[in-house]
Length: 45
Image (cartoon, rainbow, N blue to C red; front, side):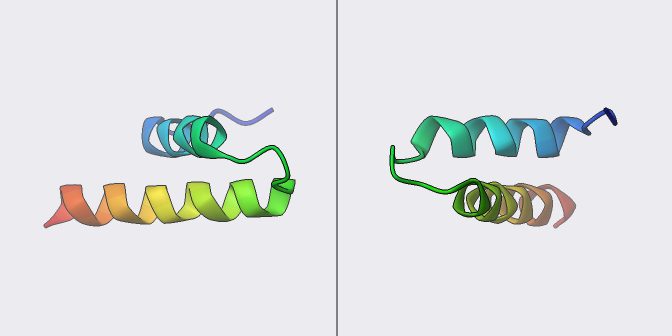
């Protein structure tokens, strides 16, 4: 398995924390993508 970069790893862990029990893997990944976008845009500006 490929190493995750810290931002992606954090985003995915946060997405897993806030997920609902009915969430699909796709929606969890989408949530992680939103977190990752937010984090990367916040640090780059």
